[in-house]
Amino acid sequence: MTDTICIVGSGHTKFGRLEETLEQMIVAATREAVAEAEIDPSEIDAVFLGHFNSGMVSDGFASSLIHQAFPELRFVPAARAENACASGSAAIHAGINAIRAGQARTVLVVGAEKMTHRTTEDVTTALAGAGYQNDEAEKSLSFPQVFGVAARGYSDRYQSPLDAMARISVKNHGNAMLNPLAHMRREFTFEEASQVSNKNPEIAPPLRLTDCSLVTDGAAALVLTTEENAQNFPKSVRFRSAVHVSDYLPMSRRDFLAFEGPELAFRKAFEEAGVTAGDVDFAEVHDCFTIAELLTYEAMGLTAKGQGHRALEEGTVYRGGALPVNLSGGLKAKGHPVGATGVSMHAISFRQLTGQAGDIQVPDARLGLVFNMGGAAVANYVSVLESQKA
Image (cartoon, rainbow, N blue to C red):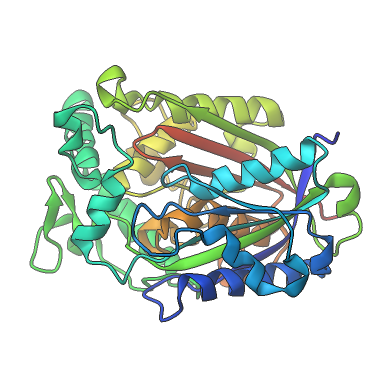
């Protein structure tokens, strides 16, 4: 059994309103990851697909579509992982566990979602299925409404202005301008993001359109292997830690603003990796709504509770800051094809740590941090990734 797992290849389609089918996106990301790893497809022992679906597409048996990429993948076991918006990270953990159990040496992980062919109402309803369905009050809330309630509660509890949310939106859209894979490469001014207008209506007060992540199509892929085998590949990034923490699904059973699940996941990941947030060179975090990124600053220990705005005011999370967050544009601007998101975060981080991130590259990046969240802080995944560069 091996404890240390490495990423040795990545694939990533453009995110956006795509012409490609779910199958075509899966195949494209798979082929790119295999080519980047310079691996023969016959060496892949297992395949895992992160895919939320929830009725958004008719490809119900989507894990079998990966075999379309190469004839050598025929008869390789494949399975789908689903954990709401963290389905991609669930697939990664399934791959890690298969390797650690000695059932595989090299694993292909793909995350994919096709969303834009459905109406906004259809997608909103599908995503709401990740909320608690056995309470009428909770069942009636869409996810924008859930996070809208959280934003109001945050402002009331801490007497904190919510202009930090607009600053997060502006930051992430500015970052996306340098990421050719991002869905929306369009900048906003603070005035545009902070004010309600015809172009920026309230979706779930106080959340405006610019506070919400994008309905997106896309796929991403990773090749995972043992640390020993990784020495045979041209590029390698190791998991210094990979932690999964799940909380109660009913929000009535927990204090959502405390963000206890994410906070525990960060603490465990830092302890396992033997690092602190101050050691990390960049982070890709789950900004499904801008209030979520604000709460994440506090959960990872950048600021005290209710003081997340300071991470923006002090420049910590900006490009060139002590810990730049979502240089890819995040879910807010890169896009959020649900099943692909966790894999995308790890693929982007792999490219950062192997010097392949292009215009969003962090110079001499050694440690990267990933936080992917399913539901309203229910399934929480944190990875600390380390460059294997000499």
